[in-house]
Amino acid sequence: MRAAGARAASANTTATMPTVSLPTTHRGFPLPRRSRRPSGAITAALVRRSVGALAAGLHACRHCHRTPLVGERVYLYAAARDQEEIVCELCRPLRRAQPERSLLVRSPEQAGAVRPVRRAP
Image (cartoon, rainbow, N blue to C red; front, side, top):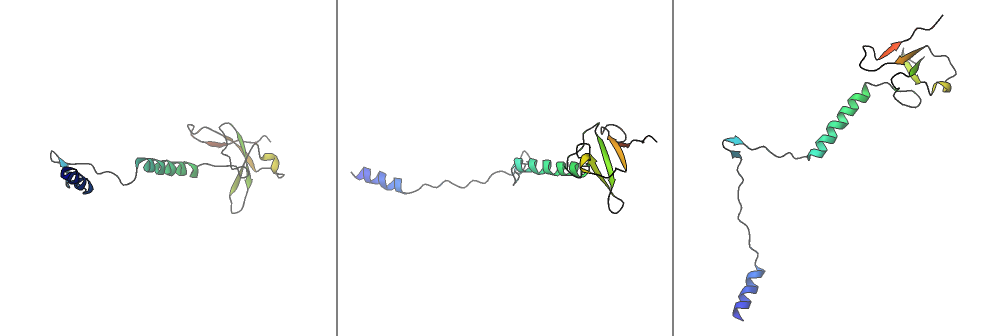
């Protein structure tokens, strides 16, 4: 019985692991530190930043906020402070006034992404 009591007493005490310090160098070179943010968060932040930068340079329709497609005709209307509003071909019937000019959307690979089209007299 005494042996059973000794085993029970040793089971109740918790054994602690010794503290071990990790090496900071390997063969004289510092080990890389782990980042505090998981890589998924970094990736998401980079994608969000790049999409924001791309969207800042794009033009969108004043009504539907859609980016015009390559080959689509867009119409420019006068706005306040020497600015122009872009209206896509789908939203053109929403405006009663005649546009100042129209443009054909070109692909970004071409020199002028949006080129003015001359009207026939």
